[in-house]
Length: 288
Image (cartoon, rainbow, N blue to C red; front, side):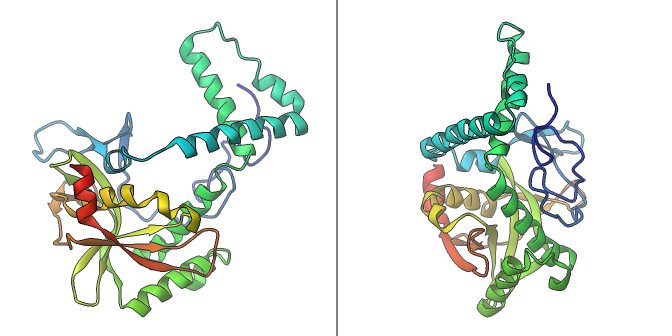
């Protein structure tokens, strides 16, 4: 529709896969052998019966967050769009005019795409993606260390204050990421959903628990427990796990059904990490 307003936003396609889209946080090389495809927000996965066609499965996060109150988030998103438009009008009014020269009488699908582009550009300018992209990068570097064997010294300096305390907290608690069990896709027949768990943690007593790295701000934790409990209950109750190359399935390891473990690395407080247990029975009750 138009040229990007700034180098760090909008329709700029020059970003390499090793950086986040807007804020260019460095990312490690892709360490997964298989990345799932999605159609209409659903996983497209191999069938249990190899002779059957591939199947679409609802994402576990979609199911888990169905009960979330999104009203506060929706208001924040709306304010961010308005903020972005105001900043755009202040800094690049010519570009704003171009963005807003939408023919509202055109085909509805074209109008929708044009409006989405304006909304996306405004949100980028307002900084809406900063926290999410920072969290994505922190998450990716913890995976690179635990799954791919990247040393802490090879983690970019801006992320060591996040990754280092995370590794220290695991060591202090006697918790270990189970080898080969980082970012694995599982399928749950009861809830007709599939998802990707972050980790399986080996606990000091030898048992395995669903583990998840979260980078949300401390202030937002109180809004997260219900969805997390549902999400982890789906993972823990999964019937099967996709092989690392995505070609078929293998049995789901035996994991604890009473709690999962969240490693909370707050993106707004580098140097901190806390291990928190999440009640899976509460998640199962909410799912029912």
